[in-house]
Length: 495
Image 1: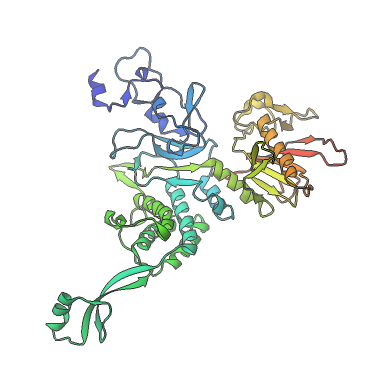
Image 2: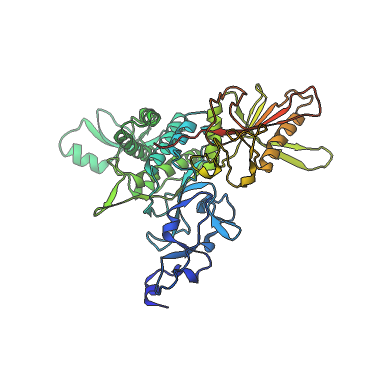
């Protein structure tokens, strides 16, 4: 083993000595659903190559394993799944312990995740997906060198929304121990030594030094929330009120916690908090508060400098883009569409049962909507297609992009992945079978995907103007054909 190898942690080796060698620089610039290419050793050079890690050691059990951003095999290649964020590939025993980490950004260029989250959090959809969209591991060592943009603003937005929601329902009062020198009365237990020094020796016989408990909102658990809130409040004020929703959530929480003292929180303040009974509801807000306290300084700043170089540190965190996009679609659709729960369809004669759960249903309009977080590429991003507007889903072959019935090159429709079409058609058939007799006939099924709508798209109607569609005739000629629509859903982009 060379001298250079001895200086490196045991995990790192030359690229040609690893089963799936990936350079550390690539791990810090990963994208969801994008293959992490192997780092090949350069030809004709001797000595150590770029510091690499054997990524095959850290493949998760499934694409839903958020602890490693859904890292999974695609043939003989590795890629993360639908998570963005920064996580350790292996739980480190100490800070800077030589364990690699991966940082994944959205696959859609200039996607504004914060605007998506705020839109969802401002709607009724958030109560359904809270806790599944965002999470963090504040007890693990922070990750340095995370260059994801707007990481702080995203974490502040999540905390402010969760805290505002928590204050409305679950803030608890508790018993707080007081030591006071009372005049003309006694309360609780008399503290004899303090009473001797403060009153008897000074001739203040009208006073009694007492110790007692009283019910108050100014508890240690609430002081932790107030400290993190104050830092978020100062941070949002420095952002020139970019998002009025953040300021509104902060003012709402500030009003609830107005009688709670603000103070510095240290490691000892977390000791003795047992998350059981009613205190179990404090587990998640305290988890997010610890994330904020580790991210922001007491003056609301998040920049830590090392000489002239700015270093960004964050606790490990992840954002579930599948859940976020599904909730964002529901926020756009409005109150006419209701999120669905899982239903069981099965025979009563010992047959098997089938679970059905479409994303959104409008019984009034007769429309079923299923959200698919699959990228849509426009001609400006891919000029090779040479058409006015094209829709190309990630994972679909180029043959799926076809001309419409008129053969006009300036108008392109979509032949989507068959499995997605089969799924939404099955929803229409199965949901009709749940009603006896059938009370609702589903006229349209919609596959919502990220993209740019063509022309004006009136969301509150069933017109879906400009969206590619497929008409399926029914066996019963008296019924309207079933309309299968691919709806490119406009997502917010950064300027």
